Amino acid sequence: EVQLVESGGGLVQPGGSLRLSCAASGFTFSSYWMSWVRQAPGKGLEWVANIKQDGSEKYYVDSVKGRFTISRDNAKNSLYLQMNSLRAEDTAVYYCARDYRVFRYWGQGTLVTVSS
Amino acid sequence: DIVMTQTPLSSPVTLGQPASISCRSSQSLVHSDGNTYLSWLQQRPGQPPRLLIYKISNRFSGVPDRFSGSGAGTDFTLKISRVEAEDVGVYYCTQATQFPQTFGGGTKVEIK
Figure 1 (spheres, each protein chain N blue to C red):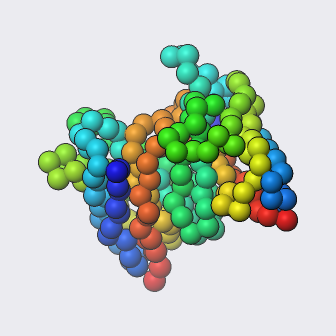
Figure 2: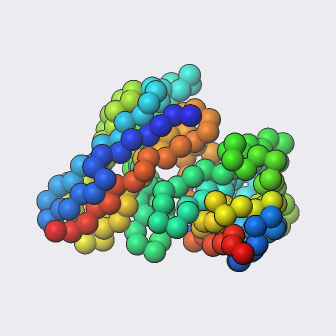
């Protein structure tokens, strides 16, 4: 059974940093693109970033470029999102999702709140 | 960026009756590889999104056959043949033909 479990969310002040993790199991992690998608409270979905199987290609939505970094550790079956210079508008539930173009599997999400 | 527009915003439906959601894209979703990367997601209250349909009309594993997708180019439709109580939630269309991947604003399906 495919499982994606996010962690690392919490309350952080504007300008602060946070690192999200996503632990994957039930599939060969190193064979799949992985993505982060976020959802602001009461709002719709927004793709944030994705990363190729070997980490050689990474893409970001414009609003997080230069502030967020996606990475992965295939030996640990884990996906990460390093978030720096956080803003109030980054407040959202962050989901990790498997695949590229078609998000077949989603985690339960982790809430990031940016507030003073 | 491609804008995805869903209608209606809300759809009150009687149990056992059909429901239909429309999704229109601001540009054609036909990719140069011949595929149309249009998917439908369901998000039940308090739950993460769940893939229902991909590439217009392909049902994902475990999705009941009362869900069907159709369309082409810029106009797409998700149909639920007979709505059940567990279908309550918000439905999103999403395109991945052109970077960046974008989502529709969502359609809330609720029981009358």
